[in-house]
Image (cartoon, rainbow, N blue to C red):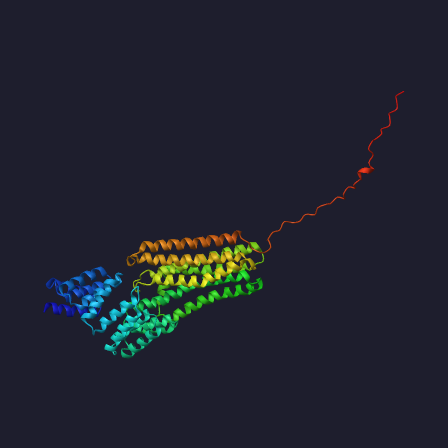
Length: 493
């Protein structure tokens, strides 16, 4: 009876968020019944919830030794082994859990989840298990939520939205479904709807870490766009300066000068309207973010000044403008890195984000897919360009941006290095990519400073007038006498 009471009270404590109380109750119960599989599974679940997967495996293994037919222990081992990247063991325990409970939707969804997330993804098995689970519990919002997560993993956005809608029709206040709806809205570009959903969700459950994490992501991504605007304007201007005539650049540079402040104003105006009152102010006032914003603002000014100089018809000003443009991009990269580290740094009122590496690598892939064709085309045609020197500025700009993104990805990996079993190869890859980015910056800078830049010189050597003499007449050799006769001097008297 004491074990039964402890299990019931621990379940209630865990449901209301009192994890320490649940740990204390189950710890007392395991002293009374050290071989009770239910108590061991309860302790394993608590270890799993705090990301201690090795401890969860140990406790669930004890539960299986006490009762080999414990489907809960097998299911927990399958999840823990999957997160420990031991997919073969995970599949074995999931199959055992399904054999013990063939008509349990949770066991079927576990099989579907493993089939969708394994390195060798099996979409057919995932869809089969998901369909069977929905057939057993068509009116269960939690089953629709799990089906939506699996459909998202399989890349079926339509099925994901369909399951979210079906689950919310059953339970409009389902926290996980509301969080997934906000995530889908945010990924689809409807940030206003996503923030509205998140604010409604946080009004119901202010401690929901997933909703707070997504709301923080909306905020920090918007601030990161401030530096990204500087990158985009500098890179586009350097590419256009290669071929466009000076008249076009004189029109483009004032537009860029006005567009950057306008883009920043739009970002802050949108955030103030979307985020809860005081949310933006509390995060912008930190010293790191203030330094980042000042760096980005100065960098934007440098990029504008560099653009004005690049449009000049004087070669020296073109070189100087390219250097200032590259320096502005470097300052924006420093600001971008500071903002990202401020986002990844845990706060008292924000949950620690878990997707910093994915965010940085996604941006790096987008940069590579979008910029590499442009660089290749510019390199092949720079001989016919109006201003070949702008190609060096373009390469240096892209090298700085790529280096900043690689540094951010490396920082995210180092910060969560316990999650990566192959940490050393990742460090080697980051080092190689940084070396490549540094080589691109060095080559682009050298091309900008010492390569071909077309334009007149600021100072030209004056041309002094020279006096010319009339050529001496030439006397034909035949007119000269061969013998010269000298008359004799008179003799003195």
